[in-house]
Length: 223
Image (cartoon, rainbow, N blue to C red; front, side, top):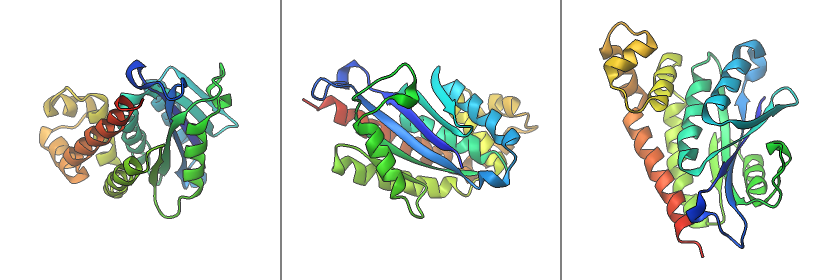
């Protein structure tokens, strides 16, 4: 299994809680990764992290940590899901922890703080769920977690082709379906449309926007 931690820095308008910077930490692991050759999934995982952030560590063979921007946190959660689901027989579980950071090292993996604790504890409490969140705000957690869990149930049914189409759509949100078809090497635009519809992409996009709005809103109202 792969242990995933992605740290997410909050921008200047919402980075003060007792004079400490708020971050979000995504913790996760791949499901059934031992059944698939690491040569298949490791390059995809590494490239995915590289696409979303210049700051990340991969260590102990299958563990990593990476920092990304707050406004893209939920987007990247689904992007990671789509990239992993595009590989045959693989899936991923993830949790998000939001909180302060007590120590920021040059290496992401040796940083520490409330956000890391929240992510780790919530991940350890996972049972059948594949996604969860813990923050300083229980009311935020309740609503956002429900939205994420329902959406990940949909994502869990993606085929490899559907997941690939979702990943490219998330990576290139401003191009049309004809352009997506060209990027995906699909012969017909209708194939892209069908795959996105079956994947529930429009609903996933609404969930990404809603959850991001709720998290950012909480940051804005902090003292």
